[in-house]
Image 1 (cartoon, rainbow, N blue to C red):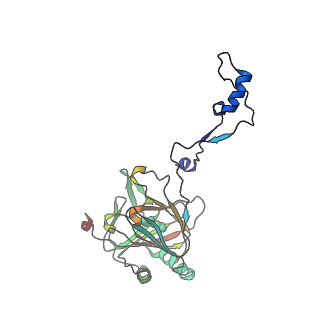
Image 2 (tube, rainbow, N blue to C red):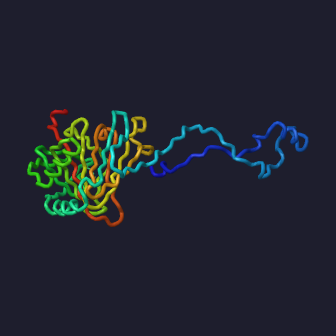
Length: 282
Ligand SMILES: O=C(O)CCC(=O)C(=O)O
C-alpha cells in the first residue's frame, strides 16, 4: 500500500517520427524516399528534435490527501459525511503538568492493571497493553468481555467530574490503558460497539509519554476497504492532554496508537465513555 501511496504517474511519450509536421514531410520526400516511395524512413532524428509530449491521461489521476496534524487547542470539524459531522475537541494542558505528574504515579501504582486477551479470526492473542475497566456494566470489544467494576478509584471519579464540567458531557464508564513502552499499541479500530450507543462520545485523557494518535477516514464502499487515498490525521497526545471525539467520528473514522521503534516511557490513557445495556440497540 505504501508503494501505491508513493507512486507518481506522469503520462506522455517521447515525440517520434509520427509526430512529423506536413512541411518536414515534404522535405523528406525530396531527400530520402524509400523504394516503395513512402516517406519513411525520415531523416535521422537529432536530439534537438526529441521532446517530451504530454498526453492526456487515460486514467483518472488521484491525489493522496496530505496528512493533517492537529496539536493546538480547539474544536475541529474533521469531516461532514457520509453519515454527518465528525468533530474533535483538543485541550492540551487540561491537567497542568505538575498535577499530571502525581496523577500518573498514583494511577500507575493503584489501578488494577490486567492483561486482556482478544480474539481475531478465531485466534486468541494478548493485547499489547494493559487495561482496567470501570463501570456498572461489562464491556465487550474484540470479542472478549471485561467484567463490570463499580468500584471507582477516587482520582478517576474526580477526573470524570472535571471532564463533565468542562465538556458538558457525562460518562458512566472508563477504559484505562497502560502502554508500558513503545512496543505497546492499539491497532486500527472505531469505538463503535453497540453498547456505546449510536453516536458515542469518547473523552480521552493522557498522562506520561507522548504518543501519536492517528486517525484515518473510512473509505466509500467502491474502494472495497482500501485506505490508500484515505484522509489522515495525526495528533500528539501529551501529558495532561484531553481529546474528545464526538458526532459521527466513530462511524466515519478509525483510530490507532501505533508502535514506535525507539525507547518510549510508559503512558496512561483514560477513555471515558457511556455504556448502555446492549439489548437497547439489538
Ligand atoms: O490510547 C489511546 O489514546 C487510544 C485508546 C483507544 O483507542 C481505545 O482504547 O479504544
